[in-house]
Length: 112
Image (cartoon, rainbow, N blue to C red; front, side, top):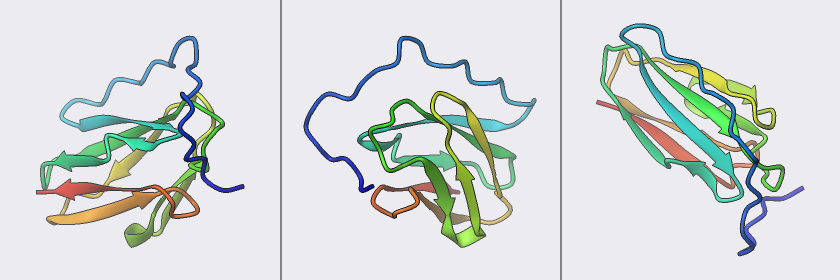
């Protein structure tokens, strides 16, 4: 199944699941996964400070049913309406790409 890039309005769920609160001192960003890909498309985090992204897939009309971080060889499934937390290594300044399993939707974490 390929990525859906149709112009039709994405189907919304009645209520999005609650995203768990981050641990003290952790930079946390929610990333919504829908028919348009990842939102926000770029996330900035502070180098040396613990960070995580919480992915929430809100539609079945997307190929982004998993998230892949090629540089750190990490792949996680994204079940519908279920928050999935990914801890980001922040020990060095760099850009980490994340994408859907088919590499149709691409985004990045900027560690500065």
